[in-house]
Length: 187
Length: 267
View 1 (cartoon, rainbow over the protein chains, first blue to last red):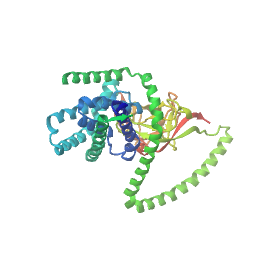
View 2 (view 1 turned 90 degrees about the horizontal axis):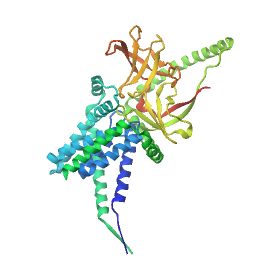
View 3 (view 1 turned 180 degrees about the vertical axis):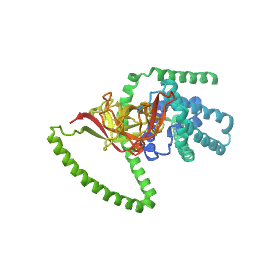
View 4 (view 1 turned 30 degrees about the horizontal axis):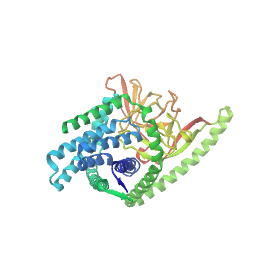
């Protein structure tokens, strides 16, 4: 009689596949369909993972997500994980203090955080690139960015995307928890 | 326990910064190759769905303006047909003159067509991925254009069946440009997806709005004469030594579906 526990290996594989597909979904679907309003699935999943798992469990996955994106992109590997981990810590900080108890107000505050975070995402990427490689950056870039961004559109669409991806992430985590606790007995 | 975890997270962040500074391209190359190989079919499917969805949404949004658009296109068609007839005549005359002066025929580039399968948003890294790679003769540094001869960017990384192209609007993109009308030279740089600028133009050069700026051919990476953008406005640089000129690109980078990589020189 064998006892096989569907544990960390399957969970790791499914979680990695999910992150991989999120990156592909971002670069080959969202960026094409919504080319004028940037929908940030990476940030949404990073925040959703932090909310569902807690920062100290989620951060390795958030870093993985960033690294996968950087590997696919022309970015130097390391830029996106740093930016994502900052926002991940931010939502963890907020959740510890304000939003965990009430589910409705909690998700609303998380949506608000997502909406604000997606506006600050690119400026933070620029700052990291500026610190790391000295890529020129001036206040003109920020004013141009503000002028060229449809702030209301970005805020609303990212908040909605977050709700969808949060529900999906929660589902996957519940399934992983369920299978993770199961023991298959083979004779 | 929480404190230890927190310090572990801080240590990881420091490690990531170290990773950025160290930038070990060779370390990630095998991972990039493997992931790239696995991802191409997914990217193809996702991008195909994406382009179809985008086209459908655009169609739905444009129903109201179709009548006006149709009238405008009909008028433009008549104008272009007349212009085309005039140019056909001029081409014939040009050929005759070239023959007369023993000049070589005007060359065309050896191009490799590629489909866009991934795209980064205007403000992040400014790149796109294409479904052709080193197996198709694509190499790092090759120029990428659209069919009118307008520059899209250059190949920054070529895997076996896909490649990454850094767009002209990226801050890391640097191309030597020249104003066709005034011969004023400068360096064209991207502005984080927010536009492009012709930098280090001499104060004595006078550029007019609407002037065409093309690649100068200096440096050898881009052949001369590829379109970069039209002059929008000129203003002095921060140190007041040069002029900076904002350019309007011809291409809508977010709508690119097919691009051409210049794989060889003039035929």
